[in-house]
Length: 373
Figure: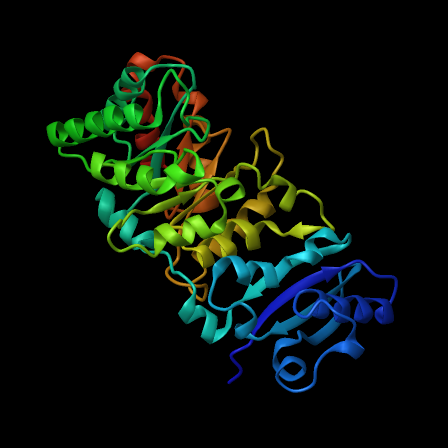
């Protein structure tokens, strides 16, 4: 059985000859990056050079499947993604619609450390949708976020998630905020018997990231939020692969929008927010929900959820986490759309009365549970 990995591209081309020429161009661009007549014979030509496996019409465009040697990726997630769509991402009319890592790279690349089963075990929620209230807005002090987090735990939150905009602002520096919120969550868990997990948002200068990760773990964080559009998928893989750190990773879509919004370029929604997140080792993938302010369609969101939970995907299935426009009134519809294996983000809808956020979270818990009936 071939160990080569395969990438499916949708190409804009006038006819089959142009589509095939574009596919051959991608195969070179993503590997040797030299004219075909200059490719050295032997190992480079036989193995390293990308191979066009298929070119066929598809829905007004062209589908091209290209295979690559695992040696071209070297077992590194960053180089793997560079081969999948490095220079070709700069060319118009090329969109990645599927990635199959193959046996060799599937063994070398990181896997989600926890996945659906592990996250459910950690937060003691064996069934039902998971609730993740979001701590916001920026500009407030650590004790405010600590009080808000405690209320979320009392109300039945499974994950207390920081907003991705909370970083190292002077009003609530990363370490002061993490210490305060982690302590409040631990205290409320002990008092109520709950098992809520606190996920701070990873932040800091490049030279601070490693120390901040360990600080969060030692302070009592139950997971970490990473923005791979800003910190890179290599950071996700580094955390997922660290047994000593042993932190679940929730990825946030900030800065990734341009990768999916143009229909002829980038990656399709399921590939970026499902397949690639799993290949990097994420356990939870956050994405904009249908009906919110970001314009993702129901079909886009279903593709993401399906790619996150596909049993045949890389590593264990992970949790899709739709956010935006979520409310008690939409709970039944969201349960019907996503099923139980999802993390539902709750932001602005909970903050109308911060002092009674426990009641708002409890109402959402009841609404999700009612939607299962």
